[in-house]
Image: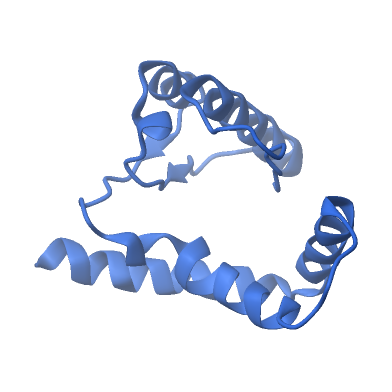
Length: 134
């Protein structure tokens, strides 16, 4: 699931709650209603993520929330895996407008092998284990 925040807008607890519900529906749709293992959700401790409305939505969706140690920005898979490769791919390109950027990002995501995303999650598991052990 990919979401683009409208320019000038801020991620709030209410906005994030909507994303949690969208994610829940996307997972149900993709799994054909046969989700048996549960969903582990990992996000940082941003106020929108930890707001009461967001935590309620996470609970309603039945997601298990992984704890995020404070001051651990290297645990967000988007920061160390996804965005690093995406930035490399888009480096040096000029875009006419936001829609051109969105199209380029969507194309890049579609071009990635499924294993690319799986490797990012595996690396997260390794980093998370090291961080929690300290």
